[in-house]
Amino acid sequence: MGKEFVDVLVIGAGPSGCVSSSYLKKNNINVKVVEKARFPRLVVGESLIPRVMDHFDEAGLFPALDKMNFEKKLGARFLRGDEVCLFDFSDKFGEGWDWTWQVPRADFDNTLANEVINKGIDLEFETEVVDIRFEGTDSVTTVKNKNGETKEIHAKFVIDSSGYGRVLPRLLDLEKPSKLSPHSAIFSHVEDINRETGTEGTLISFDIIETEVWLWVIPFSNGNTSVGIVGPTGYIEKLAENGDTTEALRKAISLSDYYVKRFGNVDFIFEPKKLVDYSCSVKKLYGDGFALTGNASEFLDPVFSSGMAFATESGMLAAKLAIRELNGETIDWQKEYSDYILYGVDVFTTYVKEWYTGNLQELFFHRPENEDVKRKICAVLAGYVWNKDNPFVKKHDTVIKNLANLIKIEKQQQELQ
Image (cartoon, rainbow, N blue to C red):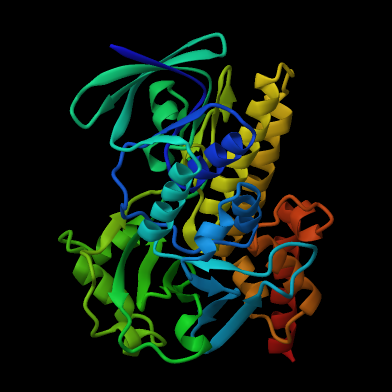
């Protein structure tokens, strides 16, 4: 069996793995990436938020991505019947990027992976991790390639960016159920032949069908658009009773008064994919000689597009801490990594939960708009969930509920008058 020796092994070549490996390479660390799939590959998570731009920039990946002319995302629109709430990332609390992208992930991830290879990083596709053992912080990972050949990769540190593959959580028994109630999704891409010109055609929108059921519409610069339905798993199962995801997504589109004209008669580019009970969690985010990043650790819900933000945030932080550890420093992984990442996860978890209770929707659609409240919520939606100067971050567990209750009381008083 062949052997290789590296400083850091990164599992997975998605956004988290590419950010980690690029940053490590930039800092002269001997890094290797193994990726189970062959790229380009289809994956969900097409709406980004501005916080990710900080990481692509810092890792030196921004120029290659920018050249691709992906659709710029300047904010997001939420629809509920005739009600509209529009967030503009340039009008938010605190510092941060004012825009990001909405992307077909096959092209986006392929661009990232190619740029990683261009930087001289050893990236092996179609290579699966089948076993890992740790001797202190040193590890021996057994990988198998598409021809069935195996070899050992000896590393001083492992960053698991395997996404839904969740390699180390499975191998080390770290999985645990999510705290969020089970939701599922069905999505596909369409050739957007009825797309309006101007902002309307390119704007990302979330159309609320019922309090817990919503349709996403994510237009791409290539003329295609991603359309998906999200709801409680039981609701999604009923839409696709005979397992026919095409019929289910058609039915979902017909429920949207706003979008049925644009997408009602359009063919799907691929058979709609179903994601069942997608939220997931882990018992711990790190151990001796390894860290879990992105969806390999926590995945919440697509409603606020937080997935890639946690992927790149954790990927970048894991790389920085690994470098310090390799240089002989003792790292408090609990405080500097786990507590930090999970604080952001907790903030977004509150927003997801309060979305599905309807409390956050009360704030979104309350009129007249409170500009100050909106700017602070906008900063959270942009991914700046570690800025504790923002009371909607610092007091996330009470502020939404309290404000929503005030709005409800106000409504009741108006009805009594």
